[in-house]
Every structure is written in C-alpha cells, then in structure tokens.
Amino acid sequence: MKEWDIRDNEETRLSSDETLHLGGIVLAEVFTPSTVTNLYRALEKMPGRDEQKKQERISRIKTRRRGSGIGGWESLGYVRREGQSILGDGFTDPDLPEGVDAVWMRLHYPIPSVAVLVATFTLSETWADLSEILRADYRTQARDRKLHVYGRFSRVRAKMPWARPKLYRTGHSIYGVEQQKREACEELIAKFERECWGWLTKHFPGRFATEDTRNRPAIRILLTRNSVPLVERSRPLALVGLDHAWDAWSSSEAPGWMLNFRNWPLDERRRFGILAAARRSDVARGDQHGEPETSAWYLIQKFHDYHSGLMVRWTLMCLLSIYADRLGGLRDRAAARRRFDGSVRKARDLDIFLLGDGLDASTVASEMRKFTDSLKRFRYGVVEYEQVDDRPSGEAVVGESSRGSRYLRVLPKFLTRKVVNSRESTVSSSQTSRVRAELSPALHEMLNEQSAQLVNDMSAVTDNIRASAELRQAIANTRLQRVVVLLAVIATAASVVGVLISTVWS
Image (tube, rainbow, N blue to C red):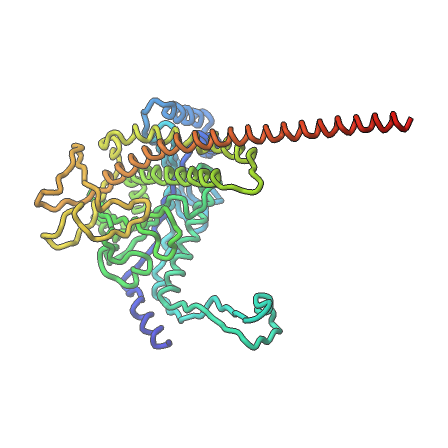
C-alpha cells in the first residue's frame, strides 16, 4: 500500500510550473412577490448612499416591476473589507468573509414578478489556492470502522467497550490518495461557498434563503496558469473536475472561458452547480503597456460583467425546478392516508402554499412564457457558449449522435436539441457541415417547456387539492355535527333520568 501511495501521489501531483486557484464564486438570489419586501428593506439599509438616492432606486425598481415589461438591470456597487480602498459606488463591510477581496452586485429584473440579484465574490489569491493541496502527499486511510456483534442485543453490546463477544465481525472503508485530495479541495471550496451564502442571505434574504445550500444556484470559477481546463487530459486537474469533458461548453463571445454543467465530482447530491474555468492568459487583456492582466481581481470582475445575464437565465430555470418540487411534495402529501386525517392541518398547509409559493409560481411561470416567446429578446445581453465538439470530421452532427450525455439533470436534452440561430430559424440536421449546439437556445427551449408544464401542473394540482381539502373539511364538519347531536342526546337523556330519579326519590 505504501508503494501505491507513492505512485498515486506522483501521478496526481500538480507540476511546479502550474497553479490552480478558486478565483471566485457567483451566487444568485431571487425576490418573488412574497419576498420582494426583503429586497426593499435591504436596499434601505445599504450604506454608501443618502436617503433620497435610496428611495429613488427603490422607486425605480418598483416601476420596472409593475407589469410594464421594461426589464433591465442596475449595478448595486461592490463591497470590500474594512481598510481596503473604495472607488465609485462601493462601501465596506466588516462582516465580509475572510479571504473575500470584493463582492460585485448587480440586480436584474427580467420579468415583472422576479428580481434576481447576482453577487460575484472575488477570492484572495493566497486564501483560495488549491495548488498546495494537489502537491501535498497523502497516505491511504481506513475510516468508518464498524463492529457488528452476533446474538441478542447486538447493537447495545457493540457499543460497550468492556464487552467481549465471541462472534463478531468488523469492517471499514478505504480512502485512497485521490479521494483524500478531492475531499480536501471540496472542503476548502465548500467552506468559501457556505460563508459567501451566509453573508448574502444575511443582507439579502430571498427565496433561496429557505432552501438547502445544495439547492441554490452557484458558479465556481477556477483559474489555471498553463493547462487548458476541460480540454486537456490531466490527472491532477481531474480531481477538481477540470479534466477533459465531452459535455463542456466554450464561449464564442468571451474567448477562453469554459463551462461544465456536471455535478461537482465529489458531491453527487448537489443539484444546481456550474463549473467555470479558464487559463489566465486566454482570458486576460493587455493593458496600456502591453502586459496581460491575469490577476483574479481583474478576471473575476470581467466574468461578472459578461456572465450576469447568463446566470439570471439559468437561475430562473432553477427557481421553476424548486417550484415544481414543492408542488410535487404537496401533491404527494395530500394523497397520503393516515390514521388521523388532519383535514384542518392539510387545509392550512394548502392555504399557506397558495398564498406563498403557489401564487409566486403561477405568476412567475405565466410571465416566463411571455419572456421566452422571442429568442432574440431572451438572449439579449447573454454571452454565448457553444458545445465543445472534438470529434473527427465525418461523424454525426448535433441531433444525430447516439453517444450519451453526462449533463446535470437540469439540462438533460442539450445534445438532442436542434440549434436555433439568431434569425429564429431552425438549422436542418441534413446539412453536410457540422453544427455546434449553442447554449442560449437550449436554455430558452428548456425554460419555455418548464414554464408551460408548471402552469398546467399548478392549475390541475391546486384545483384538485382545493376540492379535496374542501370535501375533507365538509366531512369533518359533518362528523363534528354528529358528535354534537350525540352529546346533546346523551345530555338530554341524562337530564330526563335525573328528573325521574328525583321524582321517584321525592
């Protein structure tokens, strides 16, 4: 095993001329009709502006959210730690997590009923360095040791340190070098993500604040020095999900940036997550002296400027997925039969849902269908990505491939979608030239289908649940009336018997 550890450490060791950093984390919070008051309160508490400008901003946001369909976005400035320089529309916050250099915030309102806050956290080069983790040496470990005792009271006897059972067996799990490196990288990244979510939900609590962290949309941005992520074969980079991927997307309008919608390699329970990566020199821009600007401060700020629109579209799809899950859970609970019916409790749960997520889901899904009517409007301000296609010439074009996909479950049909160009005309798959799938049309079609399905499900399920709740309430009232009548009869009989006994006794 020592020989295996030496071999695995050498094969997974990051080269000395390569670096890997977690450059930033992009989070998104949505404010629906039931949570938009939290947004207004947060804007009033934001420092850096006088009261008149704050009220003007809030009034402007309300105007654009009142069904006029104007839409748009506006910058909320940026936040830094105390003692750091501030220029323009920015302010300091002592509660900013350690290792975060700045938070760039932009508020979007694509449809009247939803405001989306995109917050991009720029991380320090030294605090978010993953290179040393991938260069360190690890040893195979035995974890999760378990003792199973045979016979009576086996579970209790297995926990007694003084017990000496005759029949028993033991077991444990083996954690190798690669798995420990993955865990170390995931632990560092997850720590930053939890702290960033904590800061965002503290100051801007929206709809996602009530969900588990794994069910909130987030983009993790990784930066390399020499290797091209998601394209080149690299065993060290494979530990953080940057190895060659068949389902990667490359930007045609922001060259150098790559996306992958797979789950994070270690956390399969993670539902909404995008992995963005780039080689620093590919996405850097030369300054006035001709030297490229490759710092994380510059690159993450540019990523925020270019990709906020894409993050908003993807966040809307995540929101509809959560609404669909909530509706499905309510439907399943309504169909469950228990010994104690609980009709009043179910009616109360339905009332809470209808006035909360139910009203929000109906409004959002209805407006989303209008938002997705035009592909030209949908992709306005969205940086375009194309599917990486490294197959040799002569193979099947997009839509004809039989090769399976490893996409995140939210995007299960990208490879089988027909590409729609900027003129909103479908590209025929019979063309001899190879066609590369585009991300915006795929998101557009998925969001359109999702909103239409949610509108139909909301109408059908809520009507059925409402009718069932009303019927159960009527049954409960009938039973209560019968009990009251029975008690009245018993009370009357008791009084009559009492009168007769008193009469006879007297």
